[in-house]
Amino acid sequence: MEPNQLVKAHYKTGIYIGRIIEDRGQAYLVEVLAVDKHPQQGDLHNPGQTENVFFHQRKALSFREKANVPKAAAHHYDDEIPAYETSLKDAVEQLKNKLNRRETSFNQRAYENVLDLERQYFR
Image (cartoon, rainbow, N blue to C red; front, side, top):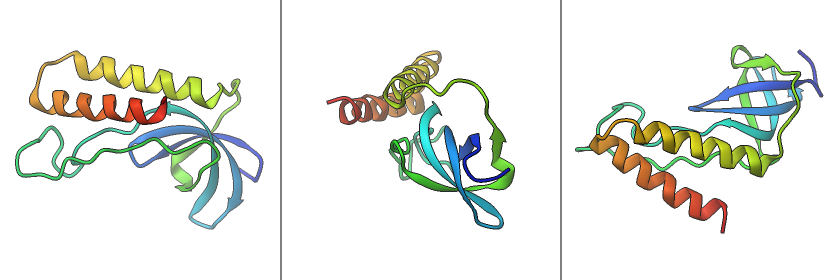
């Protein structure tokens, strides 16, 4: 892949649609244009746990934010790019729906994080 090519990129626990800015050897510098999947909440080293862990709140990358994405995590994208804010709203809704499927202490805590992020994103 080369600069200006559109990609769907897995970055940490989120998935983004973006444009390659630069080839950096082992990674591509990708400019975020839309959110496909919102990052997970909680402690990634202790999934599903709420006791005795640091429960992280993870924001989605911002519009035009740049991230170093490992080459193996970037895949060609040729569909239409949704508007960033619309894609973020959709990704937040998908995550909330997923967290509401099972009633666990982890899902409740993660859901509260997502509600707080939603307030921050869409003031």
